Image (cartoon, rainbow, N blue to C red):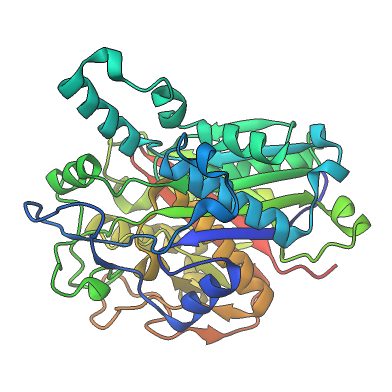
Length: 412
């Protein structure tokens, strides 16, 4: 098996666009949550979200082409081009058949679906856009990224709810380690802050209703947590075979060393009691990486700020890591970014890689009233410098999906 490294990242998030701005926001504990501005939410129980502000795709996408893309596709294409630039890769100078694209999205183009359904009802079927389907379907993130960059290698869309981004990264790791590709553009993209999606999550009572204090609404592991906060954006990384990266003198951010994937086989939305499936997933990732539980220094938790997720993920960590769970640093960066659904795993794998590179563990903000049953070290409110060598990133999704990525500080 070949060694796999991360050589570039591109991020579009509620706390910043571009690696430097984004990472500085994460380190400083900045919240990206605020009142929803993109549509009228006066009749909704939840009126807050983590929206991407000041997003202008024109630097990366022709305006005519952009009009034929859903917002989640635009996020993916722009973030992919950022990541390639950060990695210093020009695909025209590569064997394009050895460059792949694996991107996850939990929902896809729901805003386009809403807009075109309104056209159908008001104007009839003859007025539906011919671009409706190719704007909406979930695989258009990888399809358009491949077209925009010229990547002709393996191409895959992962749709596993909130584990989609992590599953994409994990499958990219497998593909490069097997020798199927030299380089893969991978991660997740999502843009679901829309009237229908918000109404659906509100109906499930899954969202926080702390509308008066939006920056304090995402409170993972807190006793007063009352639901997650919807986010949007994309996290795309360049995953590369080590010798290929070294041959071109690439800067290496971190090394990918393992991946685990399991299912709870329990419930369509609720995690299995005790986090049984999540625990097996973390154990599988460590086994794949060839490391012991006590080797791990940091976990970027799924940490959604819902009652059962935070409780059962805490229990899963205790099961997978035993007594070492109390020596780990665990943080939920969703406290800052909100929950980016299918993009969360891509963004959080990037955070984990940057944490390893810099030796800095980001905080869980808004953790002022810890839940007594959530009793691990969640790095409350302020991040810290630390010499971390191994880390994992967890993603858990509706349908019982669990995904875990294991990473290592690159040491040559």
